[in-house]
Image 1: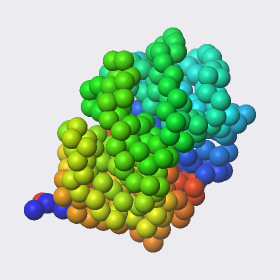
Image 2: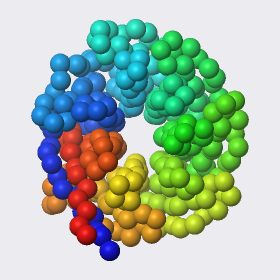
Image 3: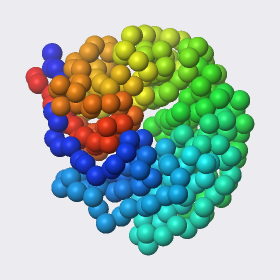
Image 4: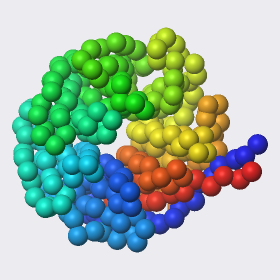
Length: 300
């Protein structure tokens, strides 16, 4: 039986404050930080690109459409910056949200940006035009993450109220409302017919979401789980946490393969997000202001 382990490829330095989000586009990644900069990096060289945005307010989440050269930045005042990455100019500044934006996501299947804020409001926007398609008050407290399935047909919305709301993307009707825990859902991940969730209870749960059936639940971290990602080639899941660790799991059995902490070349502080680069590489970002690039190695 093959086993997997993580290898650190490089650490990138440049931000002067906590890094809140990271997204990947080919050989580039974008990061947003407490230093109020959104920066583009070349993953291969480890260097900052010429593209950088200086903000008036801190931004917690970002999303990118390569097709439209649009970088969407959601800030702590509820504003949405629409940046053209070719011209390096702001095309629009949208003030639809009235509370801090904690989740921004681009779905290339539907060519739609999704945004959500600290008061439970969800919005969908047409990429390119940034026409508002719908706004929904979900009454769930802070929305920490929006996740989309492989075909863009369903959205999972992670609520502070501990519930996971699943919407279909034709008319944005709520088709499932699943109680995950009492403390809050931070992240959700579609894998085929499964849905993985992580939350403030420090657990990772596996659901048959169509039947609202809990299949498996494990105590995954010491503190809140902040993000999850699936790597099909190695059939593994990576989780990051408020407890400062990165963990590698086999899937679907969720057997721990490796735990990375500071002494293992990991992060010194909370790990906030991760983003896939390709089939076996990903990046993590942390309150320690570092970006780390990892590779999943499979031993047969």
